[in-house]
Image 1 (cartoon, rainbow, N blue to C red):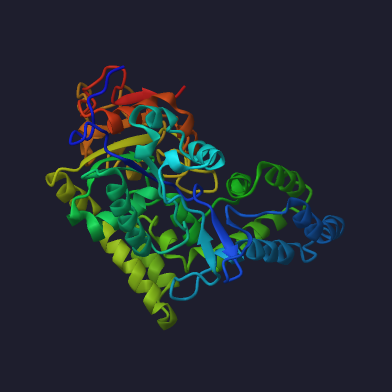
Image 2: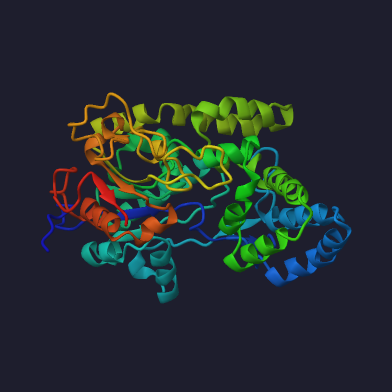
Length: 442
């Protein structure tokens, strides 16, 4: 297949920088002298040790048919597991952390590094087309500060430009990477260093699931799905079976105690977590958790991001007028995790689709939109999506029943990214019949 070159000055492609999601960068806990202690993120869970700790209070709770310190034990275990990610009251890390970074292209990565990156974001075909010397993975602390990370990203962009000789770069924001891109464009967009942006199920307008976790307005019946997301499958399945043996009201008590522990340890004092809060609900939750004077510095940081997120569409339009092109791949047609009370909202299971689509209109799941004009090319065949209200309707693609993480296995979505990031002649939803506006995952 022939491609029109993306960076014409030296007959090369624009280098592409992946801005990964929350679970795709490794962060290590160190002793302060740079020596690794253990993995801080992803969580380093010793399943055998965990089960040993809860075994005695679990058996007592089952036998006595009451909470025999089981809730306290599980809560302490959660706090212990999350402790390396805890922030101070000003939003800075409480413990010395080190991001496992890749200050070089995929071509310079070791075989193990390359395998890891392609496992996280499987864009190997893109690397084959544009050359791995043009493909980069920007690792960052997923529990850090958005604007501090944006500064690191700006330095990374400058280094990539120097190394490749390119005038501009492409961005591939994935999931939380969408929030990072917002901070970057707010702080450094005027430098006009970005040519194209390929949003991949990106949290541009936050996630209602996070709002539910912060507000505590949750459905305890969905606890297993939440555990599965945070822990390995083996641990989740064992805990799921064990919970069924407990007294009727105890699992719900344990659930809310565990969520409280997550908020205390990580969620409330972490600036990047606030960056994926839907802007419509930020103020009320900020006032609920960050009104105390001790959080003044943290509040200033979260307020800054909220201001940018609230006008992100204006920010992106400004960048578009300066020449940056924006594209988006959106998962839709699925409910959020069952723990969420927003079950009727179209999503990819983790992020609601209105956020990843930058403003498209969706009917409640199983329903249809009213007054959409059924003949419009912007309305889905099921009459439940109106793409015309998206910020960039001509460069937004929808993938029905697409789960958030599983988009990495969606060959059509990956082919879309390949075309956007390697072929200048590919400009919108009309460029190729094989890539229609509305797609079906199954």
